[in-house]
Length: 114
Image 1 (cartoon, one colour):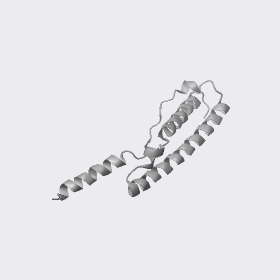
Image 2 (cartoon, helix red, strand yellow):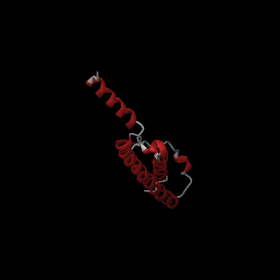
Image 3 (cartoon, helix red, strand yellow):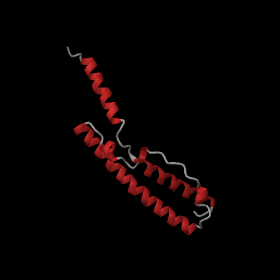
Image 4 (tube, one colour):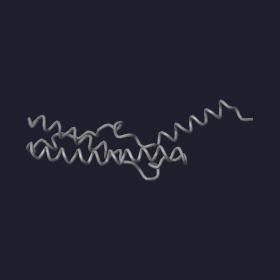
């Protein structure tokens, strides 16, 4: 005989397990540590160029991560398997470029660029 409480609990646990494999949204990804010392020897113009490049890369990978999170939501709903389980996501890249932006900002402050 089917026990409603056990069945409901099984569904809830299954949903939690499946959702845990989904790609995170970029805004919930923490920056990876990157030392500002890597950038400190650059002049302000070079730091500005590096910042523009880092922000562009961060935006590119954030957009790709958002697409992956959206795909995960759709595929979990339809086939119960997050797409990122099959194709991967861009979380490491988002974290890397967030860390790079923070490191360049610190180098700009220390060099009194702003």
